[in-house]
Image (cartoon, rainbow, N blue to C red):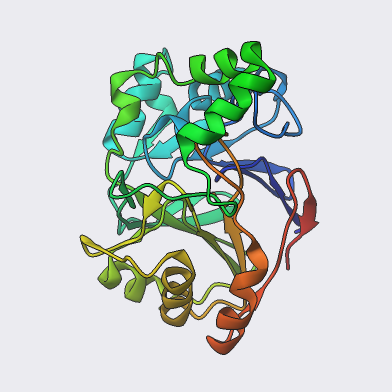
Length: 286
């Protein structure tokens, strides 16, 4: 079967396998300062399944809307399923998992793995120019006060449940002998990753969120930065190639874009190839 991937920014992807559309996360209507994505959530008309990595708003915000408009079934943690049910999605259109299951979602097989969220708020990460979040916001405020207000309003009324991670999950999606590993926050449970490594991925999409989270391995903060963290994951998983996500400037001015090129050498040393993909780009798999 033909298969394609398209990045919608942050950690959201549209995976198409044959005639089946699988969303990986569903955060689509980003703040007014973020780069535009291929479609607004209300414009999306195709979807069969939505896999949610964790319950924070920047991963689940538009899941119920997309599911209602497309008939898609939402797959995720108990909290993720509770959130979309609270927003009117029937329980029959959700599949709750905790890691370790094997789901037959024809034409694909999905294996969720227990994961962890990165540590938020352990330190202030300056952007590449050395500016703090407050300095970046002051620049936007001076340049365009209305835009600054719109950006601030985006996070003003986040539902309480979408401020909780709900127990993150990573997933392997498999079809026709091709395996895709996807991960949406810079944390990991090493034993889970070792289990995932038993199903070698042709492509691993790994979270490289910078400026917001400190990587987390088994509950311990990794202050060395996201490059060694992603490299360490790659050494365990041994994928054929790696694509990054959550490394873009997804919620400016709080976030900033991370230069992917700095990962190329370490990932090559770990035995994998870095593939750099652009926002909105659609590319073939297999």
